Amino acid sequence: MIRKIQYSNKCNNHGSVKWLSQLRKKYIIVVFLDLIYFLRNYNLIPFSMNNEIYTFSTDTHRGKNVILISFKYTQKNKEALRKRFPSVRWSQTKKSWYLPDLPVVRQQLGMEPKSMIQGKMMSLSATNQKAYAQMYDQLQLKGYSDNTKRIYMAEFYHLLKLLKSYPVDRLDSARLKDYFLHCVKKEGMGERKLNGKINAVKFYFEQVLHRPKMFFDIPRPKKPLVLPKLLSKEQVAKVFNATDNLKHLVALKLCYGAGLRVSEVVNIKLNDVDSARMVIHVVGAKGKKDRYVPLPEKLLPLLREYFKKYRPKEYLFEGKYGGAYSKSSVQQVFKKAMKIAGIRKKIGIHGLRHSYATHLLESGADMRFIQELLGHNSITTTQVYTKVTPQRLSMVKSPLDSM
View 1 (cartoon, rainbow, N blue to C red):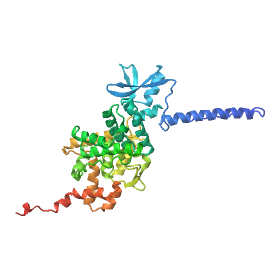
View 2 (cartoon, helix red, strand yellow; view 1 turned 90 degrees about the horizontal axis):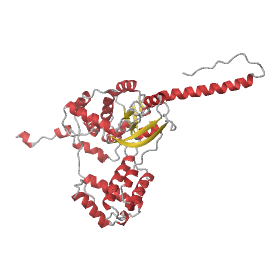
View 3 (cartoon, rainbow, N blue to C red; view 1 turned 60 degrees about the horizontal axis):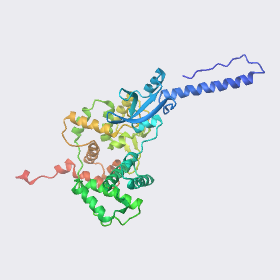
View 4 (cartoon, rainbow, N blue to C red; view 1 turned 120 degrees about the vertical axis):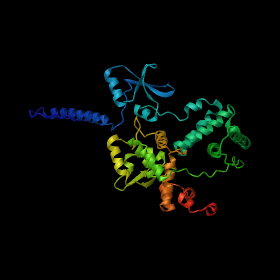
């Protein structure tokens, strides 16, 4: 750990002050360097690659975006790279070491984050590139979530791509109606998708161009009432029993046991779990709202076992390269568990959250309380679960049964 420097007693009166001053400086430098080594060795501070030794470039390899890492080959430089990134790979075709081009990897390498719009903007006509950039800037200024920005930009890009070199700001209500009709007739777009597209285009004309009356005459499709898909308690237990990986099991049990969205599960940080109060602090959830949810008692021993085994550093669930675990990884875990459990229902991992709410309702929990636990804005959203509770349906006897 920290090396100690012993002070000598052989100090004469004339040189002792100067000698002690020099020695203290050396001691401070040694302690500082040892502290940096300790913190980096245990990943307590971010690793920074020396740009004089390592240089980075982006490329594609086997159909995936990667970051190529070049450096003057020495055993020391190679070992330093592999120690920090155990999953770094050598490409014989590229003659270079590489890592996947992920936001967390860019952050750890000290690279600039990848722009959400740069690549797509260059594929648009020069006429509409400015509009595309203005749309993104306005979404950022309004503080929209990354997910909303991604959806709105994708929908707006679709419109600009169809327009080619025709300026988007010249469109009127009639032309926009034609565009939305094209989406329905030619592309078979459903009601929910079309509503999202209208919202995105409406944002551009109202928030960027400040034309609030553009959409008065544009009708919206009626949203279908889609009932939530859910699992029985027995089926949920089968899913858990089909999951033998501890990390995966804890993630699935949090989705069901705390009624969390998968995006909320992967964004839980270590200090969000309060075992003393038995609550989980859900930070910046949908709609940028925080809330507290109860931590199930049965989950606490499993969480402690998981922590001892995996030793996460910041997020409760972390990926191979650090940072938050991906939503798609947890979704794949659920899909695999459903297959192993032999459950053939077409249902995604969000079904665990629906099951949580329905099972709470069946056990007599208050509707308002369930609304708060789920983080719903409106009680109407929560009331949909009353339509799918088996207990409620079982109270109704068909006339056929009395014949």
